[in-house]
Length: 343
Length: 216
Image (cartoon, rainbow over all chains, first blue to last red):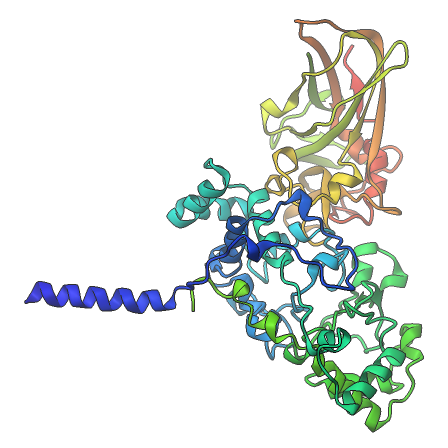
């Protein structure tokens, strides 16, 4: 009787656990690189890091695993949440280990192989080495590479996965970073209503059409289609937050003329990535447009922003209606990018 | 086969980590607890002007005895009259993403927030230092103008280096770590105890350009 109860409990528990495990395993087709029509040639070249289902899977596992932080509290996904298009939902500034607060808003992740640099200040020059930044930052994950390697070696799951991929027992930073780059590099968002409208596969309302037209006149010189960024650094005119004293790009280049410049962010999936701006100061798109429409800018504001001028109420509403067409539900629901430990 | 040994000094004294007290140009006393640098793009120039370039990257670390002797395997036979090498890592390999071996960021010679390798690290303590714990640290890197700290060193070989098949030729290079702190710019531990970005890096790189010499 007792044995039967134990067996019953064991089976129930197994079923329960299985239910939480992502049954979606990565196939060869899942890691084919498809360049969307109209997109330029990517800056990141997978030829040096050949895509494979197992490496992608390893990258996905690492992305969702707090093992990369010092006290196993914080994963990449802690701040880059899938529900928020891999930004941090409703958090103005990033939150790291021990409740520490960062100095910038978590950027959304998508179309990263078309960027030439990473981070708001462009300090990182290659997708593969980007994770080193949050991993070693004392206010983000506060961990060291040697420690991560020790932890991965001690994990049966990970050592088996590395062995399956590389046919040896070596776990090093290059292998870790390249697998993460496979996972994040394949996050391609190009199936929004805007993309379908462009391809003649969807229709826009009059408001959305007007919004796109106004956007092209007022915003697209920096938020250039189809990536919605020109990969440049600009001073968008917001008054520096004196409590953060963040000079942005200037810290990287040591050029005074680069002070208070930040990377032009892509606007894809912007509906999900609030709050906005490099320090997350604006909760709503309405606030962002109010800013660009106003004259209350700092003295070194970018000349393109000076050209915008005042936007009428209708223009603002149209632009917002258009921006909402940049939400890519297929990308947001793409099972490849889901948590491998959850259904 | 060529073996190149790097012998570390502080002026006329042998470099010993943590123990010996040295004096800089200003009479400030200090000791050294870390001294590491990259050597790459080694070129040997033969007497008829032919150049041989090695594609290997070496991290020389005072604290790791074996790192101070490097072996170049594929040098063709010949008589070589000068050598050239980079202190640091060329710009291509600063942009190459994740790399292993000497260029593995695990070696703590990599800036994560402003991508690039630290070409040279000199750390220690000085009673004159105004930084926390009386420490000083000079982390020198940067591959982009105007903060390009890559330096190429040329050394004439007074006695031609002869490479013969089946033999190991030896070259010994003296490295005077004190040169990091002087000529052309004398470093004052009380005024500039810390350089950890590319801002003042070129100044220190210009200083250590002349720290290498062929042992006679």
